[in-house]
Length: 361
Ligand SMILES: *Cc1c(COP(=O)(O)O)cnc(C)c1O
Image (tube, rainbow, N blue to C red; front, side, top):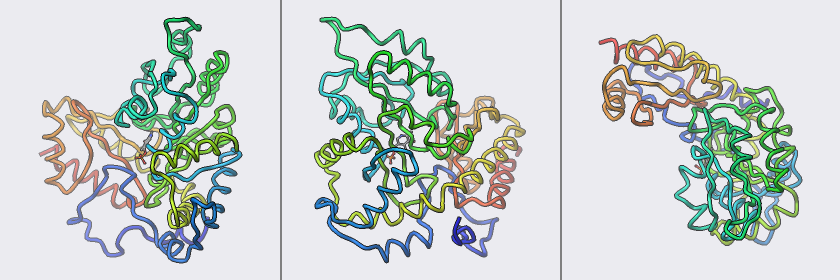
């Protein structure tokens, strides 16, 4: 890791007692000084003409770090997933997908209304799809059925609280897909969180998939951008679909420059976020009315069950706000906190102190 580790991402002389603490999401991170400098100095060209040297450097690095042949910079995770769906499957094809996946739940139905795909849903259990259930929904060709073409996996699993899908389950799901001749797309928005928590190299997760998307603008701290990785042939086709979605970019080196810093310097520090989330979870679990299933806190997310308070989620969020804490709601019973690079251990302690005050009074 470079010198940037010593950079403080929070004000030097912050008055802990009065600052508003934003612990809603890892998407709320601001670019580091190194990123701002790299953006300022980036060598640029028109990426739609394939002439941006910084994009070239970035995409080469992203492909190498994920063990894939090629990479494509996209504007958002959402665009990366949608581009992948459109590249893998044609209108009317079927995609096997977790009911609680980000693609199904949070992406405006783009899989149906833009990619034109028919979802065949399987419900995961705490982020884990059961391979037998997946096998059971893949149908043999028949005049009455759409053609199953693709399966989507997700790691870490967002709606289950950043759970890590273990490598053996991941491999088994890939095997089920291959037996049925399906392509495999991995929504790896937070794949580096998964990799660090599972102590499994990212390349092990990508080994059996055809494509993966991951985000630069979450825990890795870049201001925007995500990446699609896959075979050279896949990425060439994906480039066309990205353009069709309005994602052809010109001097995109501005995004790629920050992306290079994200990949080179910001991956290893995600462990800090994980440690902070664990501490936060354990402390909040001691507060009357609140509970956290600490076993499930594997990465940077903490889902707090407030059902014993008898209050609704909106009420809880308001109370937190009165104590200068901004969290997000997962109604009806949960509030979510996500640790990120702006939270050092003093800030985590302050969150805990305020949570106690807010709920013990
Ligand atoms: C955030 C996220 C996305 C989408 O990323 P955006 O950049 O917000 O569009 C996709 N999948 C998962 C699992 C995510 O957490």
